[in-house]
Length: 299
Image (cartoon, rainbow, N blue to C red):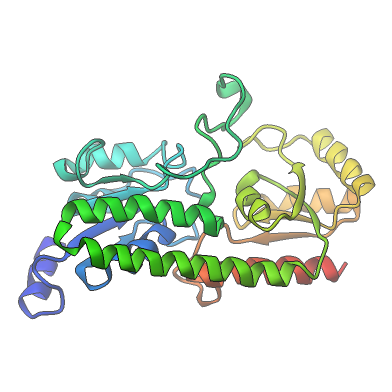
């Protein structure tokens, strides 16, 4: 990998002083590119099809991170099962926690679902610092961009004004996106339930009424009795749609729909670099919105 970078630099495809940024998810790489533009080379470890909760510290990840100038994670314990191992095994001093090249994009994020009391494993996969799926909120992505801007300026202070200008452009992109999505949703009065709380930030951003989750404990498959109880309650509440992510177990959503008579849908919870329909932040937001509206109306 290092040899390839040297070759590309020598023929002018990549500048020799280009900052190498590695992120955990595609959204963070997109933000870094928006701020740094030609000054950086940003890539994501995940393509967007994976479940970011449950991954291994693979040799591929370690190799990528070992050559990075900056490593940027979602934070809020989303990657706690694998990212710390990747960082440690990379032996890259520049991106260790506390080093100049370590970036926790959640630093300025306003987290949802922070536990009100101390949590342990008996409570499921509870994130002590709050819900980490803020990538579905334009407002919180703006806050994530503030931390990424801070880290990039620390590396290249001479480009501070340019990076700041680019970050403002990204902020305006997100504000425009939010308004477009809100305009779509204002035409509908939707009420939804989700399997796991991946979409809380999205629903909160656009004031979509959401009634909890089908899971009783986060990350723990619900029992048949739990699904039946939630399904009957959702029917009484007039829920329009049950929403799960691409890695939500199909059988649980189907059972919920069978009992409640409420349609269900599986949606991407991350930008997916291999899917043209939602391979950018804007495309993902519009895709989720259109799918929810169409499925809810189709009932």
